[in-house]
Image (cartoon, rainbow, N blue to C red):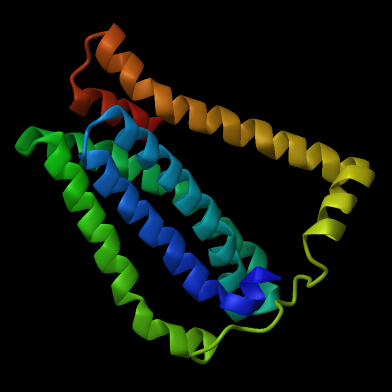
Length: 193
């Protein structure tokens, strides 16, 4: 597939760069740029997550893969909790646009700092198929549709992800706009949720 041709490391970096660009677009503050911010952020996150999983599957011994993937998955809500605490704190000392630019710069720096690791992880080129399967997207989709347990698990996972994203996206706005919480307090509630 595409990850095998380009390399999971480069795809992951591209996703992270899209997220950094989303912060730059968001700092523009106009409705079109905020919409572009949302699109870039979504594209970056959906690009970075599977490639990161692919990288971990490649370098993790099979007997530790489930633990490593669980830790990776736990990092997503921990990152959201950190953002829920850190971003409102930034707003106490700087304008929100400056905050987005700072966050974008930090994300860009992280993406650039990981470049030297590529040769250690991928040997400087795209890595071969991971041990977890090489059949491509079509057989995977067919398995999800035809196997009831996979279909149920996929629908459950999608529902959970939708609920989690909806909570994170709307909670801070609701607490701040409707209930009058300060942004710092609303962010702290989100971090704890």
